[in-house]
Image (cartoon, rainbow, N blue to C red):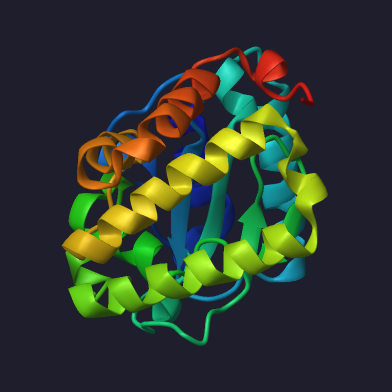
Length: 229
């Protein structure tokens, strides 16, 4: 599946193609059947509309393949210049959400945390070493971003608690906060599972039951995980 993605992107982008990389849990570790396949394709410039249309067709074809992972690709097409901009401000990129077949514009992959993982842990599918594309992200900058993200997510959740009625989202929020809390302590980015393991011992013991429940929910089959409480 990844070979088809790389070959298709390279052919369609031509001279604007720089490289293709994996980030997320495939880079930080603890990838499992509940994970997304988080990819980044680096380009010299934003693809023009006609190329975007052909890339859209590529992703629809990958989604339609008889492969579980074709439906779990998630990632962005990132101009090389955007990798050298340590945000904020963040840039909205050509982005494919998990399970989607339609591109949208999103800053989902233009965070310091994503750039850190790409530079320090990224898996090279094709192209140059990401350390030559992304400048070093200072640990203190990651801490500032994690703290801001935690506050932003909390504000959204309290503004619309209905989002928290699915078991999947509840587990996702708990494990994401564990991971961000670990970033506050270490100045690095780790997987949700490692964040949860860290939080079970580093945080107040009263949170262990909640963390264990979140880990258990993540391991459920996706359809079961999304049932409403």
